[in-house]
Image 1: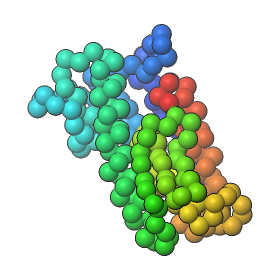
Image 2: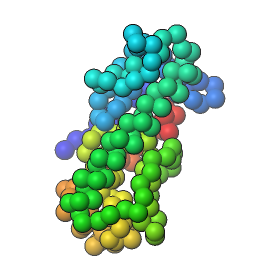
Image 3: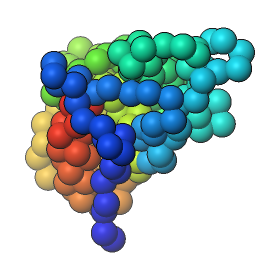
Length: 181
C-alpha cells in the first residue's frame, strides 16, 4: 500500500507572517481523508454538511480559519465519541472519560486513570488513521505501554497498525509544514 498524504496548504497560498494557516472561501481543507471546500453559507451561519465547510459570508481570512477550526472541534467530539464507543465495546474496555482538545504535539493520550484525550486535528486525517489512533489509545486501558503485547492488541482491531503509525507521522509532517498544527 502506498500512502500519499493530503495536500493541506490552499493552492497559491502560504502561512501568514505569524505562521498561521490563512483561509478564504473556495479553499479546501482535509477532512477525514477528503478534500472539502469552504463555501459561504446561504443561511448566514457556520455549519458542516455534505462534505462542505459552510462559513458565514463576509468573514476575513482569520475569522474563516477560526470558524473552520470550530467545525473541526465540533465534528471531533461527535465522530470520535462514536468511534470510541464502537471500538470500546468490541475491545471490552471502558474509558473513565474521553475529551477532545487542541493538542498539537499528540494525536491522543491515555493516563493511568483511564482518561483519554484526542486532538480535534485528527479530523484532518484519513478514516483509517483516525481509527488507528482511537484503538491505540483504547488499547492503553489494557496495556499501559508499547510492548509487543500492546501492538498485538492494537493489531487485533487495526491490521498493519505499525504502518498506520508511520502514516500518521507522514500526515503530521504535512500538516506541520503548512502550520495546520
